[in-house]
Figure: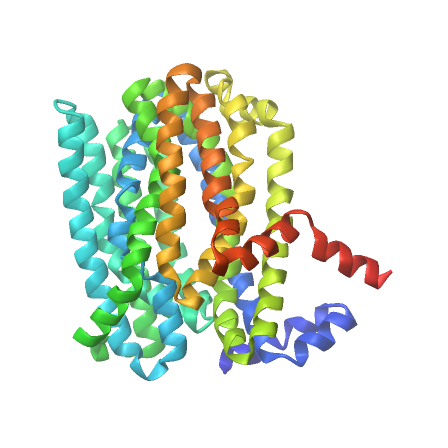
Length: 456
């Protein structure tokens, strides 16, 4: 493959013992090369995007930023309907059935378009019922939800990831990111109204989606070969419907806290809380980055044998646990100082929220690995069960804790829900008990410590 060949050049800069291992494995080179491009993309977006987000947050202030965050969280509740639970399934099926790639991608695109239209209609209907007479809120929700329609082109990103060719998709997306970043800076400088920032977010989705379409056509020249297959539609929906409901449950216990805060305490409270949420979730891109490149190798490991497959899974759990702790501990220890430095006095109350909320990141990281295992095992109904339990716990705890403790109560509700839904619940199902054991070993750093002791 041409991508593998280009990797040979950079291995000479590595230590000899690493270079030897890499040069013997074309697959490992491709994984690292692909992950490197994903990290480059996210590092750029995180660095530049984070600074712009902080600037926008300070410009808008807690109340207006809270209203924008409320609209985003509300629309987020319908994301699973737009996504149709297809990401991991499309990657898996393209790897397993490369001869059917045109049918898989064409069918998945149609399904995602239909899901996007449905999600837009549902989100608008729901906000009109829950917030009657709030025309600005209606506009913010409608503009944000319009991005769902353009996300059908994400199927091309699925293909690039299944082929470990994320560099192509990233190059296309970066053009849109740079343009929208410049637009946001201009909006701040001209003191644009709140609604302009909602339009900027939707335009970023549109430009990025168009870039993926162009990149796929340039690489494959196969746009005209895409076909819709009723058989593949049935197969994709059969495997994805539990993930759709699981995704709904996941968004409920990821976003319902902000929606409930908005309903109970108002926009300013949402603004304060959302700052802590954004800082905590800022790092959540890393498990997705790593796992997006690793997923095809996990599918191949499954075919190689169960022992090899579960050894590789344990290493992935270990990696996710260590990476999460590296991000969580500094934010936990210095939450007040970080909030004051970045957002100013107007958001100081977010420090206590951040110290609690950021701890949930550990369970998000190891929960990501479990979800990939669920996809490979085609055990998707379990995702519905576990996330449903977590979402139910989050809603009940929010109803109890928000009236008494405000933002702090919402943070505790999310932490307890994620601990239960991503980790503790795995101990109770026979098929997932081994996953619970692997997660526990990862959290206690047992396997890394054993490997370290063996080396000594």
